[in-house]
Length: 295
Ligand SMILES: NC(=O)c1ccc[n+]([C@@H]2O[C@H](COP(=O)([O-])OP(=O)(O)OC[C@H]3O[C@@H](n4cnc5c(N)ncnc54)[C@H](OP(=O)(O)O)[C@@H]3O)[C@@H](O)[C@H]2O)c1
Image (cartoon, rainbow, N blue to C red; front, side):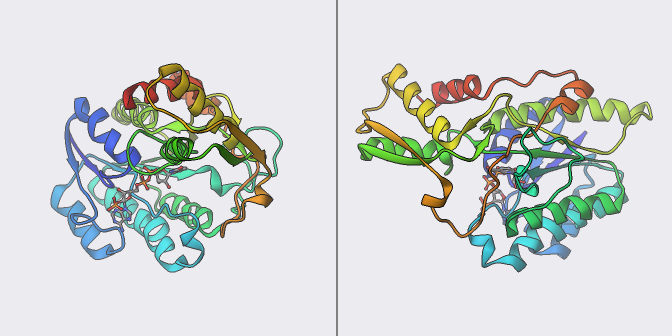
């Protein structure tokens, strides 16, 4: 079996290059080999490899920059996934694509379920929602996995930023009125491998149904709670010398950024857990494991 994996240099993509290996031949491509902003060459790459599965973690993920680069964000996050879906359908491949909690406006007071009404607050969220819709319009076999607050021990993300800032500064001010579930890229990649395996079995037996699933850690916290847990873990592990003494909770209004974020980013994973017989681990458990790796 051949799996074409895009965005192999990203947080989720890098982990997928490892977790997909037991399923078959993984053809991991980076931006130079498969540019999502160049739709005709993207088609050619798929036609050349004729994969059985396409896994697409590549995306335009610069949430604030997207406010001023709308066209590029839509090209990569909306048009390219539509092209992947068309080519997957032609070759009979299963498409696995990732989306985001930012398709919601965060006004719900409980975790979002898959068919809750969408209403993105920023351009990035709009482009990711348009990507979901472009894939669904093609009506091939696909799994769309919405995740949230992704981190891992490489690249740039909230975990790496807090580690750096806590080593440099005595006081940090972190947003406390946005809540969600921090999700380790490795958890996403390991869960994806399980999902692909089951989806392929379901396809063989004619039971497969394309669908959207929420895939995050379980439990919830704020960015402030996430930062505190990172610093607590460092202290427990004794691996880094930190200057930090206090992490001050602040409202999002005190940390102005170009793109508005939802106050509630919680996604219910009940549908995924039931369908694929999984139990998603708690966010703080995954964070501890990721930080042990980092240490
Ligand atoms: N990060 C989060 O907090 C978060 C939250 C919710 C959902 N998601 C979704 O989860 C998925 C994985 O996110 P991530 O955090 O792993 O993203 P990431 O670390 O930012 O990686 C994005 C990847 O996409 C590649 N890419 C960007 N533009 C490209 C282009 N034009 N052609 C080909 N590749 C291109 C990047 O390549 P380069 O290395 O060359 O730039 C990189 O490999 C995405 O669909 C994202 O929207 C992420």
